[in-house]
Image 1: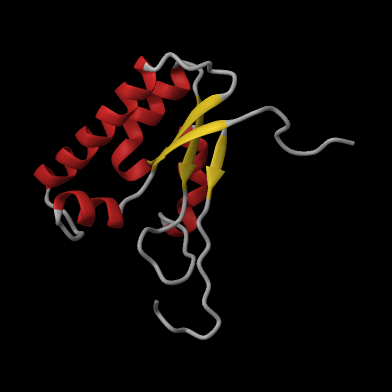
Image 2 (image 1 turned 90 degrees about the vertical axis):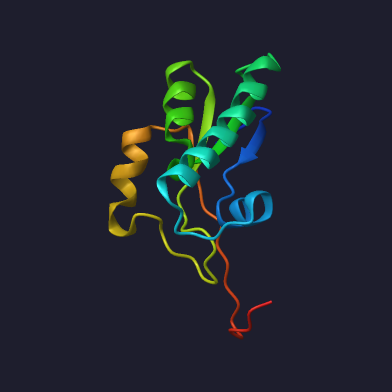
Length: 128
């Protein structure tokens, strides 16, 4: 019995949030409405580049966050693109779901191909 995803898969990840915002713009969350729009627009530029690359929808997809990339995710799903959405809270020392106990509803509303979690755990509790 073969389990899991067995086809080649190339993912363009642009789901970064806290590090992306700080590194690219020099901002810290919480952002104001104008800053949120700028971050979302910058991620749209990445997505437009992905679409212009004309890669096969059978082997290439995107990984983006719901917070700044919801319109990207909706468009990609509608056009049959392989999608992955990050479901962890950004910038945490230990894992926690974005949207708390409502994380399942968020995943179901987006209907991505995959859900991705970044799990950080440091048993010694020392922040690097």
